[in-house]
Length: 123
Image (cartoon, rainbow, N blue to C red):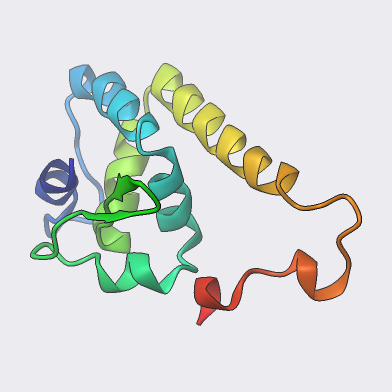
């Protein structure tokens, strides 16, 4: 998946002209990486920034595998995929579920710094 994102999004043009037939399949594949998509969109986790280069392979952490690509390549590809309304809806639903899950994990009685990002997320 990382190679696909780099192949699509690393061109010189500012806008990616993606074949419409590829939009839904790429959105479906990205939906399988919802925690990674969330982190790459947020851009706050230093691990995703340091492992975003083309030469850095996906890594394992927390019992699952993760991937990251550069912000430009990712956003360019994501915008091109989202031109399809169904692909956009799938990506939006995936991001909403991921964000909702993270919000639901915050204890109901959390206050102050407990509501902030952990230091490793924005260091």
